[in-house]
Picture 1 (cartoon, one colour):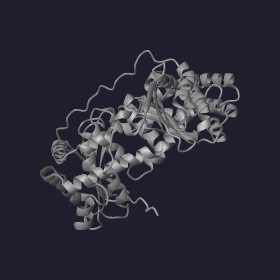
Picture 2 (picture 1 turned 90 degrees about the vertical axis):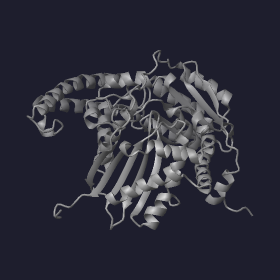
Picture 3 (picture 1 turned 135 degrees about the vertical axis):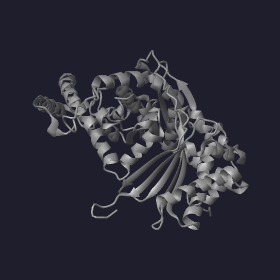
Picture 4 (picture 1 turned 90 degrees about the horizontal axis):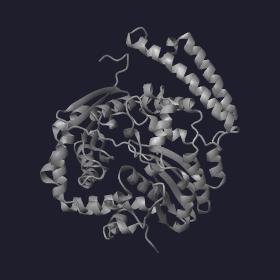
Length: 508
């Protein structure tokens, strides 16, 4: 009788495995228009996890257009010239009419913005501040929206996929990339190739302006209505002084409300060209047949003769400690963030090992601050590597009899101890095994491997993911001590202290 593979047995098993990039046989090809294709053939079940990643996220935006990468996550589900409408000709006419009205609405917004600048009104977005002309234009625009909705076939793309047995159609956006993905029966791969290439070749951003409102509402729910949402945004903006990582992926509300279809068309032409996209397929298929199919469908989309502009702004070295004190309806806590390095940097593996050493219930932070000193009820530490930079964060939620300020020196003490003494050999090997086990878990399922390959493509190349276990294996105790000494300097720290906001009837 086989014993179940417990976590401890998994770690022990992983420690014996050879970790090389050859463990996952990725077939890498490039279509005639420059679109990259990654394929992993697996016949253990008759399904395919498919997706395509655009190498553009919020870091590729600019002031005044923040949130447009995330907006495209929504717009790409609105259909094409043939999907999502009962009358494509009239639909296009309504889009043009909406654009015309919106240009006049922006004129009124400009007037209100100037009034706000001069202090004549408090908030240009307040409905009470609207001019009579703006009210009339908005009413006219609403009429056009209703006409278009009468022609719209809502969620037709999703319905087509579900009728074919597919599931999990979704997308997500980060600072570095936008990823569209789905799981489908293996005999429906041609349907996927047709539908996804049609989304790119014949995209129609219908309901563009109303979808802006959907994003604004999403922002209100995810950020404005959450206890720490605004404080978190303020903290990120403080951490990143110069880099586009300073603004939120969902964008600033003033930018999203003013975004135009022309701006969207420009962004789409620049970044959604096939030579800035990687398709990823993992599962039950014949690579040779699928490659020909992808060339037939995706290859018809013209490349962008100009490569997308590079993100050239580099974050300056921080020379002074930065602090943010927040009072919100949340548990008192302290967060310390240090800017570190991109995910592909040679020091990233040592930082990941360090994070694993500190994090979790078996980590040093939990053992010391929660169990030993009983000063915190929750702790965490993690390295977050991105395309152009990274952060390493320490977190602690204070116990009822402690203040958040009490936790800060305790967090520093654990880092300083590692910088001086490093890890024991037992700790180092245990951490390596745990991190390698996590890497293996991302290689098992079709969808998990697809996601991992796509994520790596968004920040570098898929080989960075495949080589990750090898990079972790060679991390030494001296490497961990060195990164602790190099990156965790007090003058490079960013500290947010969260206190529970006092009730109005409470006396401070």
